[in-house]
Length: 594
Image (cartoon, rainbow, N blue to C red):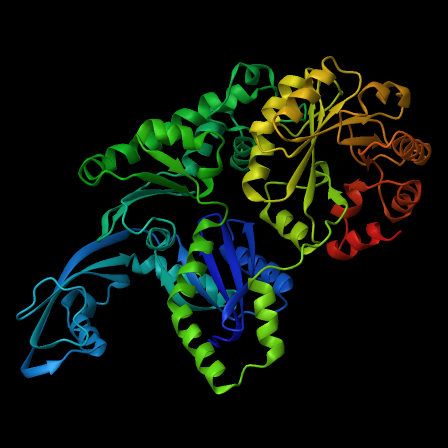
């Protein structure tokens, strides 16, 4: 791999999908990275789709990858080695490699992924950190070998070959997380809540002290939902994902599990079936790790896999395992793989860069570009276009990749409670999920009764700007609550409401959202009177020297966007136009044109 200017790919191959991270190296340093994922039980297809997305976003072609994921059973064993020589010699890294390869466990053909040194002993110097450079006639060492199921590696290799990707190296997921996420001197417990199984491992400063696998995963939770509700497995999986929550409450007893009239069960009905199966898996993990936890006292639990994204999972894990729980983030395995790979190459890259600098071979332009990249860029003006979540699948990681490709820094999240509007959409669980998967500014429109209560919950769930709706009780109290918490507060005015009702609160708010369609449903046509209302608000703002921003939501396309800009709008919300665009970045630019 070219350590000055190149790219590399890391893939996390699961049972029901693949996630990946592509990394670009520029000037011997990391310059950019992109993530993508694709869910499918056809793993070859999932690999191809994930790689395609990353190739398009990075503008490069990948034919190889560093690989982690589900390789079947993972085992670890202690391997003692010894090497003797006729006379004293200065020990090299090659001597250590030779001694390792002579070990019966290695010669036996096991799929050893990692060899972790636990201690080295020389003839006169016991328990040293490294024997390299020391002089001795013998070398003794103890290694921990982390091995994968050979059949699992073979399956992964076959999928990669069918997708035209050459595996460069295989890694155990818990090893990667332990090397990149875990603080170096602390003991940590890792629980990978995968689709077909649940992996439990405990790592300390000396290496793994527990590596076990429970033959039950999130598919077992889906089985419970499918059996209890009499659903086809695919339908049960979707309903489980949309409704499962460890924070479920009384309101779920009255909330339909799906928007269609095809089923009459509630969110609570789904959770009554799903949660016992989920808690059973967590309890098995607790029982399996009990002795190791008592001995090594892990300070933190790291939760990964698809089950980690279930709302309330961290709190449940903390209660069951008695330690702080943390979710490293979306695509944690692929990201940890990318970080670990670079940690091995970075010292050599730095040496190459310094050598070239000393010889004067680095051009001034490249050096200036690297300094600009890593010492901070000028802050670019935010793009005034907000994609509406009503038009996108916000549980698909490809959605977030599309947003990043268009330079999107603000996302508009609609929440409807079914009382203020006839429809129900969004919700706090979705808002929490979005917050976990993006750093973008979340612009939340509450089409709900009781805005003060909803605003408080929205702030706890990650909202940055909260827009309440006219015609609801307690608007001013909600705005005061939002402002007191240091968030941006705004109000949305529907096409049937007179602008005059805003006069008492214009000095208290940060934004007015002009609804250019009737609230409650996406895909409507832009109402022509909206431009006149925007212009009236602009005039009032100027006359009274106010500072509120004006945004517009509903029926936004390149033609209606121009009307809004001409009238004086500051930002636009667009749903269907952006969602249906074949070229997302180009569509964003079309909306910006004035």
